Length: 386
Ligand SMILES: Cc1cc2nc3c(=O)[nH]c(=O)nc-3n(C[C@H](O)[C@H](O)[C@H](O)COP(=O)(O)OP(=O)(O)OC[C@H]3O[C@@H](n4cnc5c(N)ncnc54)[C@H](O)[C@@H]3O)c2cc1C
Image (cartoon, rainbow, N blue to C red; front, side, top):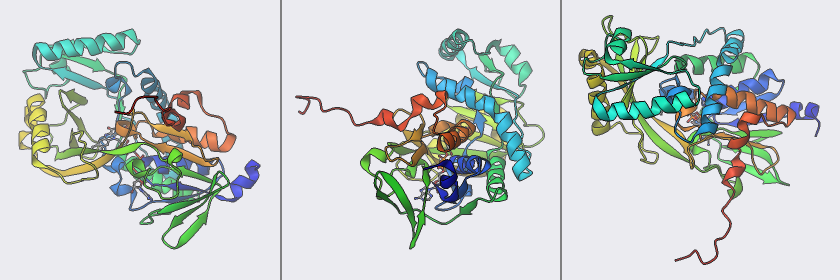
């Protein structure tokens, strides 16, 4: 089918969280007609409750080079992404580049931070070792019990709520259709393609379909097993405190088991738990108590701050914790899920990448390792059953 013909039919996106919105918007910028079907609203999606850190340097795990490269690439794309968003939405979502500090208390943390520091140096990432007094000079609100820190000037953050609001405006400004409170129940498949998407008693014909339903992406009826991404919910509880003028940290602070970050709307976020609790979204006392305890140990001034809210989001975790981005087994089905802890960071690389794949059929090199095909069923192992 020629590209021109493809443009005449709708590309349908299932899910209007940050990934569905960003991808739909980029498809609109390339001339596609786009309909985004969202079960509830973007303001109840995981991205709404996220912290908004763009932290490939801090999050780089040992042996996770592909994920690190992807995160760095996406961070590099952020200025262009936000520039286009400003043009289309009128919202100025600021990239806060003030960096992040990882802090430690005592010998055990020092050894751990030293390993993290050495690993980042080996990868040529910009990282600095700070003594306790250097750390406190840079961030005077830190506890005097801090004994060491590493400084990651490359990490950034955005106001993820403003980002999501801007994406909604941009999608509509570009002529896209965003239907909220519109759950997709199933898809109709035939001849190796998705021919339509079903919501309630409506059937929408689709030239291309993007599956961006976060941790619910494998719950759409009609998808063959081979196109059901292995995603699951990873519960994250996060506390939002209201800062006063004496308690505004200058940077993102990452302490053992907790992070604290100031947002430009007056909130300080203390997060986040990572819990395997299925689809449960109940805030619970124990995990929140631990977060606050750890945050208070890092920054004692939070003790008197009012709690604005305790929020819960469900991260879409995949089997290997890496995102699932690319064409599926069905000819016109594209996957964009499994972004786990990094969906805000990875929104640009996902959106630009899927738009390029749908428009031109080419897979950007940085996305190659994240293809859904890596989850092909394992071959039968002879004699393996016991
Ligand atoms: C506490 C917390 C902190 C986080 N902090 C960060 C951070 O600092 N930086 C970062 O990069 N990432 C962070 N994340 C992760 C980030 O929020 C996720 O990776 C990102 O939101 C994934 O986006 P998504 O659009 O794929 O999924 P979601 O945000 O979950 O959106 C999926 C959407 O699909 C809709 N949907 C589901 N089923 C259907 C259906 N059948 N039909 C129609 N619509 C459907 C849902 O209603 C939802 O709106 C955090 C997450 C949490 C919970």
